[in-house]
Image (tube, rainbow, N blue to C red; front, side, top):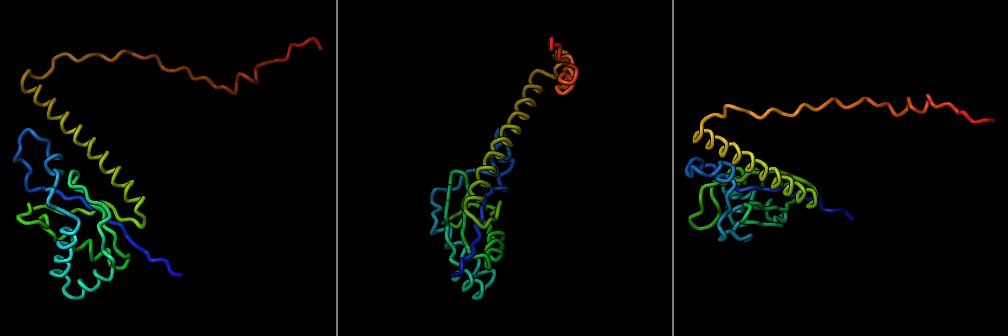
Length: 189
């Protein structure tokens, strides 16, 4: 029996056209904002199929239908979704996602679909999604911290005094093996 080989694509929906519109919000947050709740898996599939038909014509539509395209996970809160497709058609799907320029709902916002990770198992894609979310969280923290520091410096001026770090003595270089060699047996035998 032959196993059907599939690919899983982890995709993020980004909103780069809105950078700079919200001055107090870090750019990382603006780009990675939540997607409308109107986006459902079926609407996403219909939008992808329409883009494949537009880009690749009848050949692409037929290949995609035979490829078993399926949305395995969709989160509008994180603007992330996972697609499953056969291994032979995943590049065509990736290309169609690259050419999509708006959320596939009525009056959808302009956006960019970014393929973050491609894998042969859903487990690895889920791990990549968690890793990507963690990295995004740290990026938001770093960018918010830099803006906060710049705001404080603008309000109060540059700090004149900096706290000196306490001098720590260098750790002793202890070799555990040398102690055993110096020991001498002083028994009365």
